[in-house]
Image (cartoon, rainbow, N blue to C red; front, side, top):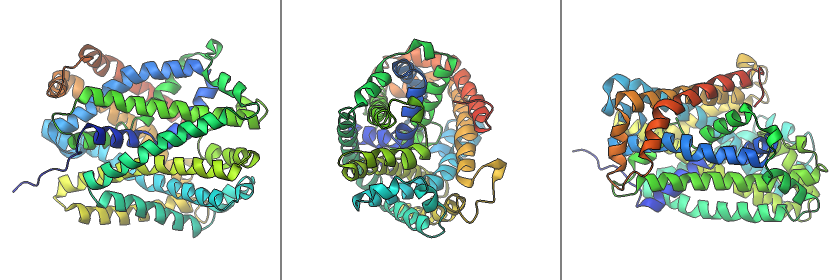
Length: 451
């Protein structure tokens, strides 16, 4: 007898879980940097335009594939066209590569949360603190273990009782924390100038690089080409308005990214005396620059703790979606029970994460393609595999099963208001955009260009 597939209880459950997946570290440590670099308000405007066109078409395509097939990535592509099942296998590789190193960073976040909760903001603000911590052999692994355990416990409980219930709890708190810290940030002396710098369009900084930067950020932010949206779509009930749900996911993702910029740019601006170049990206922003900013603030330990709690929630909702996707793929492909698959993925994640955590310490001498392990895994998954999977998915929808197959699935639950936009973008515009993202990502990774 065929096992009944798990489902989200309704639209709110799906939207919050999918938005939780989309809202991750990229919103917090890359979006503010790009916005500051590419002219503030003009970057925001380009980003929003791309979100409602390029991002919309790709997201609705993946969610519809999942709901239409009722399966995760491998099974979905296989069911819709046996010949193109390989796209599903490529998509399945992405979360398998990303989850372990993402959990390493999640462990760092818990470490920094504990530092600020115990009143040690001044210690965390020291230049050598982050490097000294990550180069240790044991402590980062312990924090990694804590983060993976929390993620595993949630996923072990299932789709509705685990993933959905936790997303419904974490996402509203994440939104409230983001808005509150953002509002506090712009009240600091000298911060309002940073806020104006952030929201005022500077057309002199507009170029094709602005568009490419916004396009790449949107692509990586929306959890596309990872099998996540296909998996979550497969848990979506047929009566849930698919188009409206995707638009709400975009509002969540873009809104959090905007408030993250409002939270970080004015604070760093005030701390650096108006130097926009002090706003950097990635771990350097989150674990080196921002602790210095918090240490210089009144109530710095409290604000720092609130910030890292926010980051922890964002990291958890993303890691939960990554683990859930892997487990769903294993269950669909091999017929495993969820609990059995969850424990296997837990063990696999801990083992595969070791190079990423030890690559800053005792394994720092091993540098594939001249990169530390974490950066290498990030390069393979984000810069290579994800654009390739997204391009193949566009070709699959546009020219194999045809856009009408997706349109028909969307129309089961509601009229498809943006049908014409979807067809044009998925067939003609998105494939070109994704090739641009692939080329620029690889060139950027090897230092041939800066984005």
